[in-house]
Amino acid sequence: MTAIFITTNEATSILPGRGGLFGRLSDAFWRHPKLLLFLMLTPPLLWLAIIYIGSLLALLLQSFFSIDDFSGLVNYEFTLSTYAQLLNPTNFDIIIRTFVMAALVTIASALIAFPIAYYTARYAQGKWKALFYLGIMLPLWSSYLVKIYAWKLILAKEGILTWIFEKLHLSWLLDGILNLPVIGGNSLSVSYLGTFIVFVYIWLPYMILPTQAALERVPGNLIEASSDLGATPRQTFRTVLLPLALPGIVAGSIFTFSLTLGDYIIPQIIGSSRLFIGQAVYTQQGTAGNVPLAAAFSVVPIVIMALYLSLARKLGAFDAL
Image (cartoon, one colour):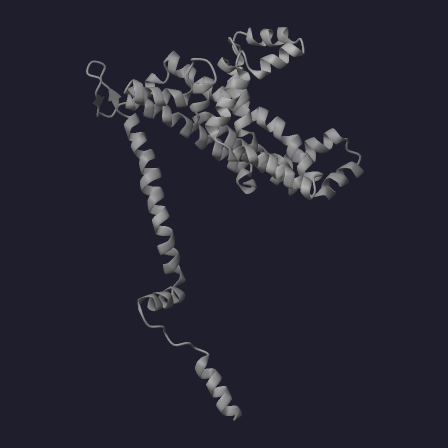
């Protein structure tokens, strides 16, 4: 009886092949897992190669053409004259203006995000940490356009912010800010300062979350050891906390910097009439019909972000994403 029992177990330990098309396919995938992986990855990789990379290559190719000044038609001959147009004072000002705004938004977001992220990573527990995540993520769930138009009403000359300044008898301060030659305007809703405020508000969550994740990975005993060795809080921050949190800050800056570089809706609704790169691309392709110049403008943030990502990779930012 024992021999029969062992023989039966050995006979049933290897299942027979299943019949039918789906059964044979399942057996083939089980025997060749790399085949299943290949079939699963091929459609998204083809989509990425054709739609994303293909469109970028087409965009790059368009930037090497030029527009005929007389007929307004695209001249399909290889030339660098379109890129030379980017060095014109008007076009170069657009590039510098966008780059400076993106840099300032990134710096301001990092300064605001760090104390929030530090408090959450080191002190918030339980329901308070859940409340933190809810407060950070909740604005991301609302409509992008609704938030921008809400800020336009807040920053308008008859908006609630002007009313608050009047009630606090600080209208002179607001008027002084609006009279500044570069950042001012008739109201905050038509000034660079207003554009800056809205950019920081919209992209701030993308800076807080990576910074908070990086700070949570900082061992608490390192901070205690620094204090035990006689370091002041400022020295601990400079030599221990900041270097370990830097990858998270750089990871967040990738989002804030790149999103500010390419955005055209916020400057279109809030700000002065001076263009940013996104608006220049939209204007050149839609209104002026100068597709090569629009493509050349589009290449600028791609090149800037390629250089920025290479620097961020050296700083370990990808490990904090």
